[in-house]
Structure formats: structure tokens, C-alpha cells
Length: 243
Image (cartoon, rainbow, N blue to C red; front, side, top):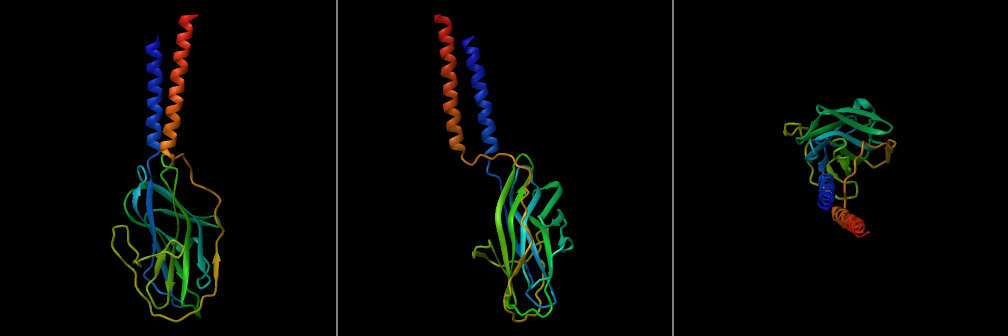
């Protein structure tokens, strides 16, 4: 009887440990903004959001960008400004949602934003931000965030991408899903920064599932609980046979 109870308890503990280890895997992915265009009045600027280094269970099923901010050098953004060969984009005041019918495992372009520079613009640069970028594979991964990505489109120099905090990455050209590069440079004009307009940030979130951030603490608590359970059972058995 005593051995049977111990075996049941140990199997329960083992199952809990396996479950915690599984949900504490460090799911991750990378995202980057790029553009091959310059800031020229009356012309288009294409900004590409690419994803890479995907470690998201069976792949990325959805991406949410909570807020997209552009300078007033550009015309107003609508849903028609977004195109993708991989995801179905849905744009609203609550941000941009990208949904895929099948999990995405390969590096490539997530979405391209095509902006129109206003006529008569006199700025020499303008910054575009994709804020609160979150991807999910469903209940197995929950929400995995890469924060904010930004890119500065210049009139007389290549675009510079970064994280919106002043840290920049080397400028790159947009990539297609098969890894090839594209994009062309336009003629240049000098300009002055005028300001920014932004779309309302979303308060909605993708479906979440817990992901243990402090696995060591969780396992320690589980160990202490397990020892307590074993001692309690031992006490009850001892009490039963001594009464």
C-alpha cells in the first residue's frame, strides 16, 4: 500500500516536471524593417517587415503589430497599403494583424507597406515605426514579442533600420520569401522634418498560453511541494499503523 501511494505520487510529480519543461522552452523569432527607397516627393516608399530565426513550435500562425507610426510626409495609411504573399493582412485603428492558414517556419517577408510621399515635401528624412510586434503559434507558444522596429527613410542616403530607441542596424534591401533582394532607389530631394501622425494602438492581444520565465524557481517550488506531499503521506501511513 505504502509503495503504491509513493509510486502514484512520483508519477504525478514526473508528469508535472515534464509539463513545466515543455512550456518553458524559449520560443523566439527575429523581425526587421528594410527599404530600398529614398524620400522623394510624389514617389512611393516600400517598407518590408521580414521575419527570421523562427523557433515557434510548429511555426508562426499570426503576427500582431499594435501600432504603426509614420511621418506626415506620407499620405494616410489604409488597408490597401499592405500586401503579403504569406499572410492575410487586416488593418484597422487597432493595428495590423497578419494571419496564415499554415504555420510559417521559413525566413522571409511577412508584409510590405507601400507609402506615398506627399507632393512638395521638404523633409530630408522620415521615420516609420512598427510597434509592439507579437507573433504566436497558438496555445503552444502564447505571445512572443520582439518589441518595436523602426526605419528612417532619407532623401540622400540609404535607409537605416533599428528598434526605435536610436539603435540602428545596417541598412538592407527588402527580401522576397525565397531570399532574393529587390527594391530600387529613386532620385533625391532635400527636406525638413515636420512631425508624425500615428494610428491608435491596439489593446487586443493574440491568444496566450503561459510560458515559464523562471524555470529554476518553478522547479524549486515543485520540489518543495513534492517533499511536503511525501512527508505528509508518510505521516498518514505511519499514523494509521500506530493507532
